[in-house]
Length: 318
Image (cartoon, rainbow, N blue to C red; front, side, top):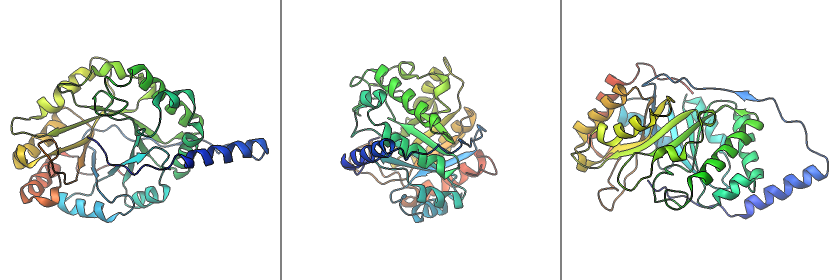
């Protein structure tokens, strides 16, 4: 789904690059700190997350979601515009509540081929250094839903080879900076009419930790098999990497009580890591429904039931 981002001015990157270059010329650079290692367990049904408007900067929306879901989430997802720095302060707040930051880096304001060529390396190093300095697990995605046509980097708009080169460059740069506390989430749109063959964007197992699949229940006819099952089957043809349902929800038009139960049962049956619920009210057609649990008694009731029955009794901590 399209994220609404506040784009930061390109001057931020320019100032960062000039300052870093000046420091190098002046001989003031120091040795990089030791690498930070922090990984997440691939245990199935161990993760419950949410995307919450207003988080960041505040933690309040996460608490509101936890009350509605009758379960404390252990992942908080948000979209980060290009040139936006890693929010280490918010990450520390999440860590205090045993929640893992999940950052989807959106390159709308960048050139994906230029990323691969190193044009934005100073910005990426700054981001990676801040992630390393945080010192705890962080889930990072980049250019999500690239197999779909609605983003500038997506299917039919940018060659998959350009995405792969940029993805590999970013992962390599973060590792060189010692940010080994990143769980790299290669994030697909669930297979549907108009999407491309997912294997075309595969960067290689050494560059991916987990796989994310974004998919929604729009209609009463939607099931876990029809929304996610086909994509998972396609993935298993070339990788056994763990799968996280990285952005999902069930809309009112789908019949929320029954379909939320179906979502949780499918999550468990397919042995996925868990779900990240898109807890946002949208309007404007079947693909933009009110996804918020807080706005539906039936949705809240079904979600609490599904979470208690299908998720691990104790969710893993960040």
